[in-house]
Image (cartoon, rainbow, N blue to C red; front, side, top):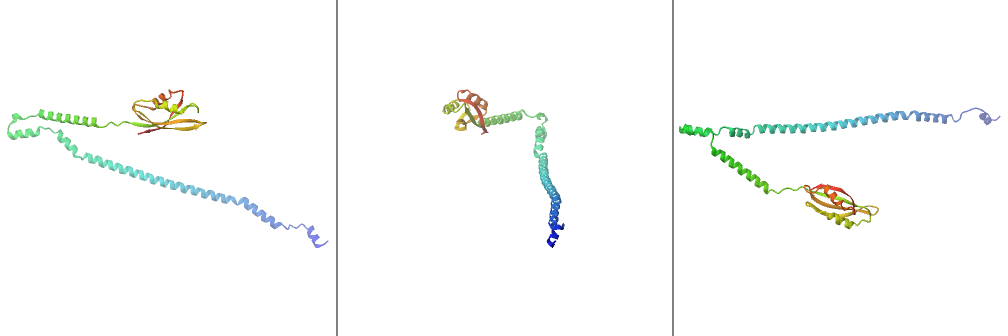
Length: 239
């Protein structure tokens, strides 16, 4: 038996090194990701904690600012109340409430004529006060009458939908504009495609709020039932 045949007959593991390397890589692959995953989870927890701390810091800063603003407002109110309490208006009101007979009594005492002292005031003063009051009321009424009255108005955009694509839209618009009432002014209009060849009429109007409402407009327009299927308010703005 030759040497090569002897080696062939022997049970020698020539690839053991490769198998050992493969086994090492297998176990490293099986056990390796666990520490990395744990490390990643720990890192994620730290990031979440830092984010929460930053959020709490921002919230705390905001609360401090709100409290500071409230404190400043309270200080202003307290200062204003103290100023009003010290205002000379109170002293003036007290002086006005004092008896108006003090001066005549003093003059009477100086003249030595006690019989002419008017302890209850003068009717002339009452008449003068009443006259001044009446003049002020009349002046206020005249000023209020000359002031122009503000009329509340609104701009309304209506969507008027026909029954189908065969509806005469020009006739439909003519019917809508035929609705006339006090406080209503029709504006611009246009046809807007809806689908399947159907178009809706979008028309604008200006109304006086005390005279015309959306319910009245919808009721009057839907009376043209041969042309109008429905009326919707697309936009409503105060002027």
